[in-house]
Structures are given as structure tokens and as C-alpha cells.
Length: 81
Image: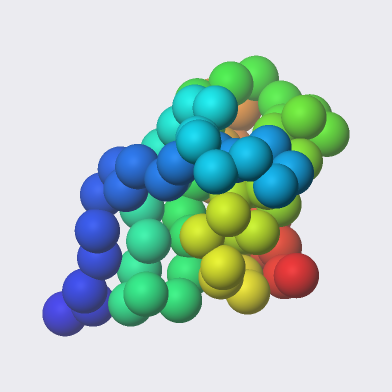
């Protein structure tokens, strides 16, 4: 029963430039509050945490779940700005 949006595209701006330099796409945004990023890799690394933190800033959200299905057992990280 939760509302969500899948793969929302967000433009990336560099400093004060008015033109975007690219885009990024988050896996899910749930209830306009929580970002959910899914991975299927052996182990989560710092680069994946940095990616989610950058998404939180770009989407102006406060919390995220980083979920990894690729290890022997499901792993997840909860991140808050």
C-alpha cells in the first residue's frame, strides 16, 4: 500500500552552471521520503555508500536504504543525511 516511483531521472549540475552536465537515476523513491537503491554484488563498498549519499542530496531526501542481494545473505545499510 505504499506509493513509490521507479527510476526517477535527476539532472546533475556542476557548481553554479545553469546547464546540466548529466543525469542520474535512483532505483526507487518510496512515499516521496525514502530512497531505495538495489545492488546485486558480492560486497557493498564505500563507493556504493557515496553514491546513495549523493542521491540523497540530489533528490533532497533525508533517508535511504541500500540493499544488496548479491552476497550469501541479504545485506542492507540505512543512511540518513
